[in-house]
Length: 234
Image 1: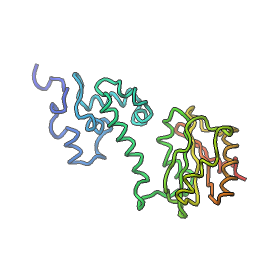
Image 2 (image 1 turned 180 degrees about the horizontal axis):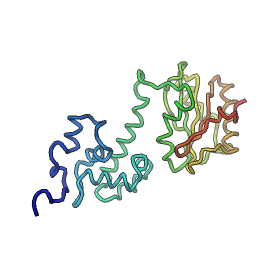
Image 3 (image 1 turned 90 degrees about the vertical axis):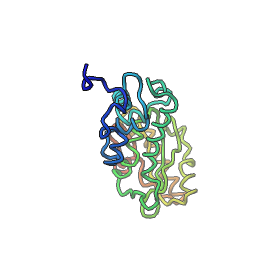
Image 4 (image 1 turned 30 degrees about the horizontal axis):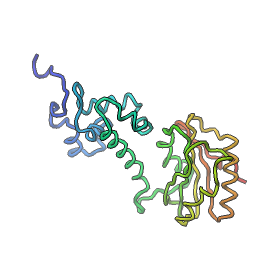
């Protein structure tokens, strides 16, 4: 068997210009495929697969980066060639990417429409397996101050304590907020409980002088603005 027919099992078997780390150094991270970025985190592969191939397998098995984000840590740990340390590295990298969007005050995004709000959270929240309720806190120019998770579990009018939604707004002196929660079923159609919760939140906001700009429901690839539909907003 000649050298060109040998299987490539290690990153060092690749030509230097094809190795992920070297490609990132010369071309920038935006030039790399997701599997190459994962390979840099993983550093080494397993017998029979180099790190890029392990990355390709993970992306295929979990349905892309959003699937890796959604996957329980334990499930990721149990993948061949991963383990606790590498699983933690992957989860940490994905979380850093999520936080980057709103971390720098000078780069805080402004929310001027439901689509702007959805762009901030839909990618992550559409991957969640349980219902999560979050609030997007805004300043007087509708720039994002913070995105705070308030509740995890079934979002219904009997379990939600409306006062909890405004705690972070009062702490940050935020004049406005947007409420967001996801439907793990993938269907963002608002339920009667969603409408009831919205009505209670809007009324509480008026009493506390915090403007509730919208309540959004996130599904798979779709979202609904209750404000646009006139649901729960007088």
